Length: 509
Image 1 (cartoon, rainbow, N blue to C red):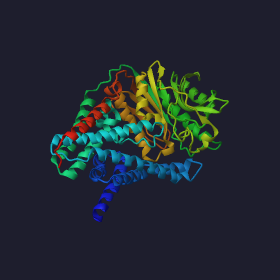
Image 2 (cartoon, rainbow, N blue to C red):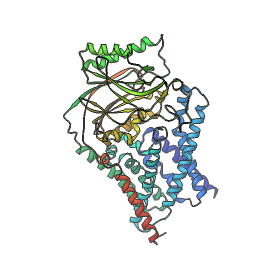
Image 3 (cartoon, rainbow, N blue to C red):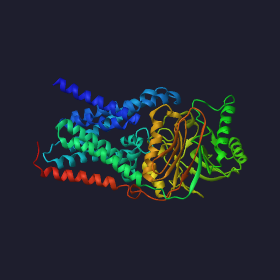
Image 4 (cartoon, one colour):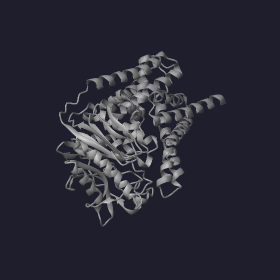
């Protein structure tokens, strides 16, 4: 008896650690089987209290692995050292309760073995579908809390072909592929039924094949190309602008600005918080950069990620993106829509981690999910965490965005897996919306992603860098953009079918 108990908890721990590692490393091979032990334990437990507890154990260990990065960042940048260990611990407890809920719901839906093979398939699909729907609902609730919004399907962003399926069902279809494969493997361990082995291989093979077909047949019909230079000073947040460092940092900016404008780009894309001060309209450093630009005989528009004052009396600022022309005039402004909970705004209007900058000013939400109109088309703007918010990206796409600029500052987590995910999630969204992405990230991955999902360039450096490429506008819409709830509706249909069939079946083992 005790041996069996130890075995189950070993499976839970191994599954949690393997799944977390596969997620962080974006290891597609391991993620396709690492969840199976957890699912197997959930399938075989009958006691509701033990189901809850085992789900909690899995979620807590899984969370400890995924949230460990926060203690490094909090040590460096928070003014309260106690948060270093408390934040990942409490986040892991929260994940423990989340996966307790997962375990109870999924166990209730998958506690029967069928003799008829087609019922096994329907039941497994219903199990995976329930998991995906819960994750999708949580993702919606996590808006503004990207450190919780760790959707399993993000891992498949590492694959060009798997990413293509997002154009049909968004991130949900990618999570579904992973979980359904794991369900078949878990059921195979339990029942030794060959249909589960066939099902696991079929899901992966069919998904890859469909992705290849979608990629091979896709064509961007746009005839308009746009020159974009992505630049980043890659300034570590630990380095502050001062009398001793200011000249060096400024000279780095002058150098990359000169390099960026050599090819006479239409846009120079700078990262979020490019300067660590509030922009008030007459910035000497910006004027110098524009002068360098004008010496190249360029009509380039500079796109700066800056904090700007919006209410002097209340000392309110907005995380914004300014489009500034060669005459140092703002031709357009985008204000961040989805503020970071706990950082840019208090969580539940009560709790906020006291970063030094936030103590001086209050961030305000004033923006709307509208792309910026330009003579080259409508540019969708995504500031940092907005670039992983699937629903928000699709709102900009439905409002007419023809291409996207991602402006981020990954300096807070530059040595963690978060930065890697930040870039590959953009690949999923590029394929999902069939829009080109240009990405400028301080201390993160910079580059360009085509609407096909192809990565044109992807660079991360400790030094200032400049990358220039052409992107295209695109007005076409994908199945997912036209019908964002289509795939979820199909999953609900499978769950309903399974619930209807189950009571009428006497084919239990």
